[in-house]
Amino acid sequence: MSTLTDDQFDKLRLVRTPYVGPVAYRQLMARFGSAGRALEALPELAARGGGRSFRPADARALEAEIARVVRNEARYCFLGDRDYPPLLAEAGASPPALILRGDTALARQRTVALVGARNASAAAIRFARELAHALAGAGITVVSGLARGIDTAAHVGAGPASTVAVIGAGIDVAFPPENADLQERIAREGLLITELPPGAEPLARHFPARNRIIAWMSAGTVVVEAAPRSGSLLTARLAGEEGREVMAIPGFPADPRAQGCNSLIREGATLVQNAQDIIEAIGAIDPLALRSGRRSFHSPPSTDLSEPERSRVVELLSMSPVAVDELIRQTGLAPALVQTALLELEIAGRLQRHAGGRVSLA
Image 1 (cartoon, helix red, strand yellow):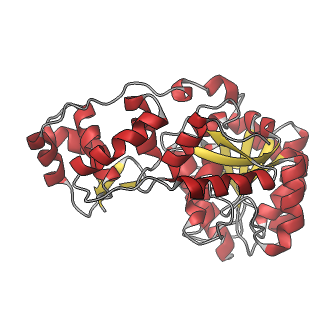
Image 2: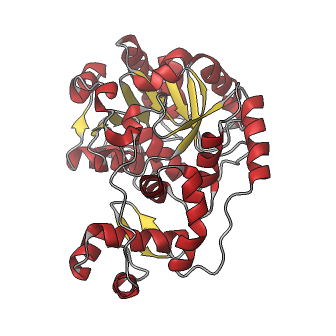
């Protein structure tokens, strides 16, 4: 495993710097052209946004992180790199950096996410396993989250060499513990993905972020069993927001584990009964053909922002999320100026970004 180049190290430092989220990362790269120049500009941007102090990620801590990645036979992949999952790169808030272990070619093939309940029924587990096996036999990569229940059935059914496991922990952390052997097999024969640094524990707050990777790197998401307000439904919603196909397996109405899937179907998800239904639903999507301008960062926002213009944006913000388009409409400012003000506030730690292009005060 090779170490990072200077430019890659700067990218990682930018990613690990507090308050630099996926949207801010893209905007910084667009404006300054490189991570190194963006890092130099961060203190001034934070000051403009009202931040009192600013510290980039510690270089020595990053060197220790890189060493752990190398020891675990993994490597970094940055947005714009050839091996970055092409469908994931299409999402506007895709993670700027991933840690990969395994066969990166799997993410460049046709991919389908197969997710569901951890406490799934025996019938659903068997169905998920058979469904994954049929998809893998048709040359489709199965993506899931390595959780108990449906996720495990999906990985086992597809076989380690035809599956991608996206985990909500560090690349060196096995979770759940009983899937340690399966996780290692996938890492050696398939592909293991995380955006978290080595040693990161599987905390609850990590799993919504993991779910977005699962949904966005897949042409479609199939939910096998899911209770209302479950993580599987969140994955389906994230897929739908990015224009991906959402599919669900119908279940017996009296079973609480079927309520989520039945609700998805009632709301317009494609009803799935077999692998052929899935193949027809995702069509002939070629992930490589969708690799558009996400490989490069362009259209940098203007830096020509006066204090009165900045104040107009801040005055419209509150703790309640509001769409950026609404801020543009109400301020009457050019979109680039509003985005500049929001970027400065975010770097200062005063802005929080939400799904659907909405923002609020932090």
